[in-house]
Amino acid sequence: MLAYIIRRLINAVITLLVVSAAGRFDPGEVTVQWANAKGEPAGGIGFADVGSAPAWRNLRAPLAAIPRDATQVRLVATDDDLNPQHWIAITAPRIPQLRTLQDVVGSQDPVLLDWLVGMAFPCQRPFGHQYGVVEVPKWRILPDRFGAEANSPVMDNLGGGPLGITELLLRPTTVPTYLKDDWFRDWGALQQLTPYYQNAQPARLDLGSATRSGLWSPAPLRH
Image (cartoon, rainbow, N blue to C red; front, top):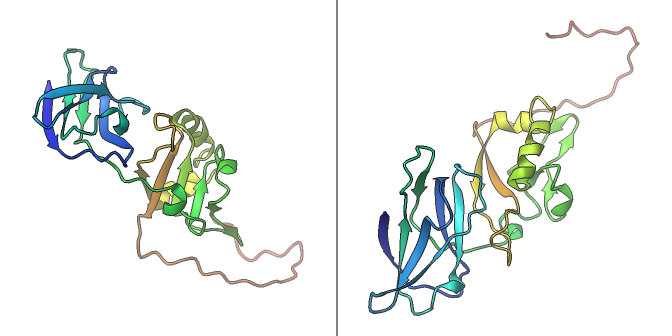
């Protein structure tokens, strides 16, 4: 059993207590317990796990389930399984201060909207395409993990989709997100895209028009 104490006054205005975890474990093997003002154990609850094991994901528990007079919380992970495929890695618990997707992403930043979610985010601006040049997106919005597994192969370089470009140029960082008033649902994911080459210059376009013969050839094709 792994346990440690986090001394923090529970603020009932904030909604969730979140723990990042990786591994394969059963419900109830990672719990949060709390104590009253006298330091006496007063109860505990488990976490909702909506991620894909064994990858890192955010376990969440509602703060409304923790009494307002609780002044200490303790995170307890129990691993009595000798199977090497059964393991637990956890971070310290945190209480996130939540903002809406519109506040974070807005309607001005270019966004890569996966094909399965394109109609669900009308306030976000899809990244542009003009004169054969793709605008570099700053964000990507994905469907839930089952949709992402089915969706990504047709968007990658083999499928001829935009991931063939963005995966070469941009580093994705998943931003922790939750669906308001449905906190335990896997709604999808938000990624912030950071260029690998910060000093890369935008493409310079030489635009114009010309009339050519059907037999005109400017140079040999590059192979």
